[in-house]
Length: 465
Image (cartoon, rainbow, N blue to C red; front, side):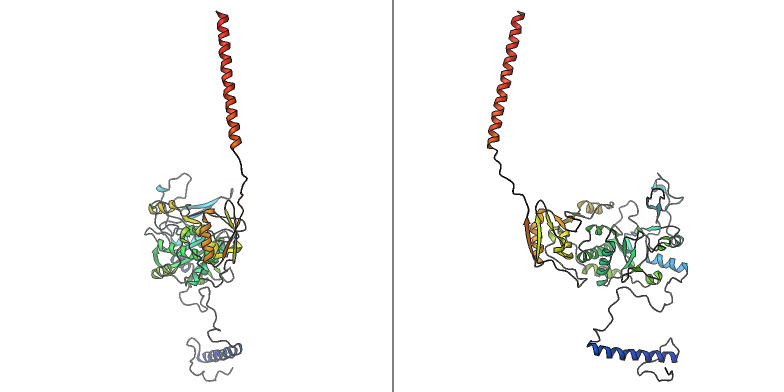
């Protein structure tokens, strides 16, 4: 290409190129624009129809800006980014321990002199979370856990933890619900390689209650996309409490990017289009957006509220996907000691609605939360349904009228297959007569036995006289 060709009209050379190179690039861009216009005309597409789709992930800039942390950055810059992004309690952290003999593992707060069996934790001095500790974690020399709930009952991020065989599918539904609403979320594969963590970061410390409300609303939306999600997902948010119980430090979550686990491809952040780790984890984390306090509150107001029991009056479809399978026109239910419904007839949104209708708030959970006591291992919701291995729902018979109402709200019809045993008629009149006769005979035998004993006694007295 001739470099002496004049600039394209209305454009100037790119500022970071020499003049000649900038002119060449501008000419090539103009040729591409003309080619795109020709192709749109051939395909009969408007300019808006031919635009590239919006990206799922926050993009990693092609040109690395000054100050962006990358895999080539010094260790100090990586540690600073980690501490800034995954900000948690700095006065304490947890260490993972593993027993190579019996395979047991767990977490314990890091204390001066190391943890000793039988030691009183109240008397120990907790070690602070320092840059050195983070560096050791990133190198894989130790694996640390983070306590997200600060002493001011705020947090800098909320993480949803998914486990089980369908953990990644559940996590992707959560990510989809978040990104539909413009909430940036990062997906991490957990240390086991079978679970997933979905992280949402904040630009400032926000109340833990607000952060958890945001996560709860997104889980509710995700359940409408994946009806097979369990209500136990509501109990897998970090921080796990709105406020401190007054004892302990609250629940912890394993810190990502552990050097030892990274060698096996775990504790890394994934590209949701391929479910493979980003090549440059640090560049990706540097590009993540963070929500402000005002944005958190705005999203909470727009998220659907979680309804339970009699509050679930009609089917509400999720908004975060155009793929929303409707229930079958005829939904068949087997009616015997309980109600059994085929999951294939319901669709994900209806399965989620029925699960919520068959659940209720757990009074013990809210009593403990109000008293600032620990809610660990206490479910937020009590479930009155069961699921078969195929995913079919088993409900109490008392929910039949509510089930009718839900099904009719979706435009479907509930057809009941009554499998209750009608039983056989029984007559107890003859049995009662037989019982009375038996009692009379028993009384007569007892009376005769008493008379014989009296007679025998009189005979013995006469002989002695």
